Length: 362
Image 1 (cartoon, rainbow, N blue to C red):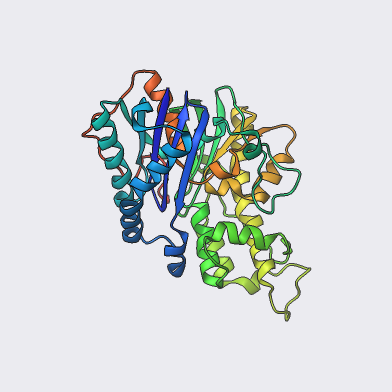
Image 2: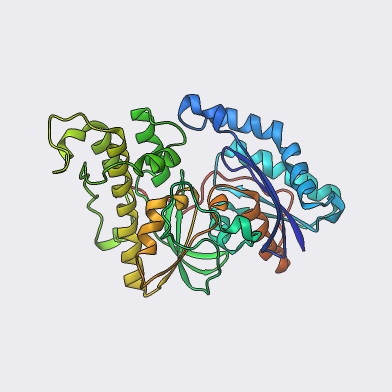
């Protein structure tokens, strides 16, 4: 079954065709980074307008690259939640119109669950060997399948989630952020110091030549009780932006000008360590030794290297090109729903949030 997937949850306008939930026939992602870079963050109004301008062309390109026409598509899937409401509505409406005009089964999917599904996608061998820029040779594997149950690690600009996955659409959230998402923290630190945009990729590149011990930033006091699997990034942002001099390490004595590469490397180390402490707690307590990652931050080279170093755990990452938002993961998980004869009514609406994906501060 060939499924067309549409993804417009934030600032990436994406479409893809996937066969039988695994084989990627095409994947097109039109990035809006140049339009948001001046603001060091996504501007929702700009994002939704660009989706409106691009969605037809991106979808046509995905069909052309797959060597297919509209008549060859057998199902349509679109991201409907969570994300920027205006952006979601563009892709969701387009996908519903495509499905209605061809009398095709249609399914609206959760794009965070799709991130967790992304590692199951199959790429041509040349593409599947690609690694994120700057990643060390000793890297966590890209692509692969895992038997349920396993631990899911979903990290992006808007969400940070540690969960138990019992099926592709059945997760139990164990931990999440009580304030900011990991990706958001990368963007805010990068914006403050003028490193560039998007912050995650820029800081990862800068960290390759920085000293991660130059600044010893503190970890949040979330390690017991109901918050044992939760994370927090507001304190780290405050330390990096407003209290930098208080956390100099021995290799970076007072009186010396801080190097931007050292700030980036030290921040990245602490940000990932916060995440891994909660993840390892969850693995220890649940006994689950397989971890499947997804989301834009899953492309981070330090995160991948740290997990690769845990020989007692099996860690599966999507190929780098499927860590960020993309249509292939939408089409892939959409197929699984459609194969169970599950469809969505054309009256289905977009939702900016999903209950349980973020914990309120106690």
